[in-house]
Length: 373
Image (cartoon, rainbow, N blue to C red; front, top):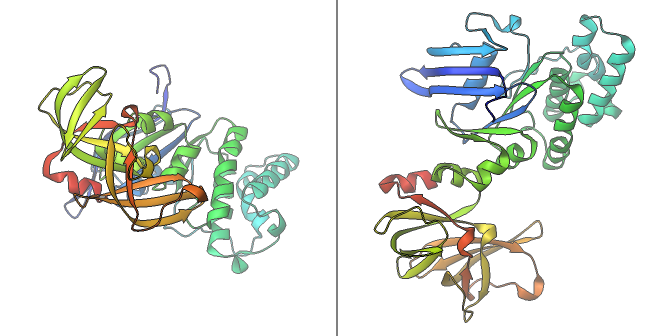
């Protein structure tokens, strides 16, 4: 986020506890105007609580909340001018209104022109894949349908700020994927709209957002564009959450530019990160998709040997779990090719390029806890 971008939403040193348990710790966050901003993190990280504080549904113990430069701590939810959809709250659809009537309720009350209401509502119905169900009533809708209606209605409120808490969470995989593709285009077409979208689905956050904040058990670890966070995670926690990675513990034993040489048990690894001095204990991260798998007699740089423990076919990819002699299990994901697939029990070697690694300072005994999240 550049310095020139004026924040439309700003949190300053916001904290929140429940019964002595800290849920949010000193959160400061700036969200630019007219952006699609995701707050992403593991279950229990405080994402929904943060959104409720923005909405005025919860009161922070400390800190200030600004919307468009105005301090809103003491302004009730109905006067904050926010459209919202929360996962664990009733969708509050009017039971005597059809899907179409529920969606247009906001602009109709505001007295907007009928032709504009109809045009936008038709686009919304297409977005949420309910054009053929416009005349249905809530009592015949599934939970997923109700969530899609509530999403469309939130986008039709006319608010300049929309808060979405897991807006696609109750939907089946195919519908969720389609809505991901269309949601941002619809938000862009509405214009003058800032969206804050909370999700624990990493793929969803990477696909829809301009910026992502990683909220990790009450603290924001990193903020950036999807590409920035994926390519340059600033911690093991962020790397582990954003990607399916393998983590090898080791120690820098020498520098042979352009490489650092790291001893990981009985293996010498080459990495391109030169920022750690000899003797430093580190953790080397390699994404599952950056690993190659070969017959056991293949010679490669950064070679590890082991036995295929398990294999799974997933959407055109083959996922292998390979157990090394140290009993550590490495996960590899490669495009499926029948001629070159391996069976469970096969001896194999796996390898990776030095530039396809991320190196972090070793956090000590808490590493195991970090990787279990």
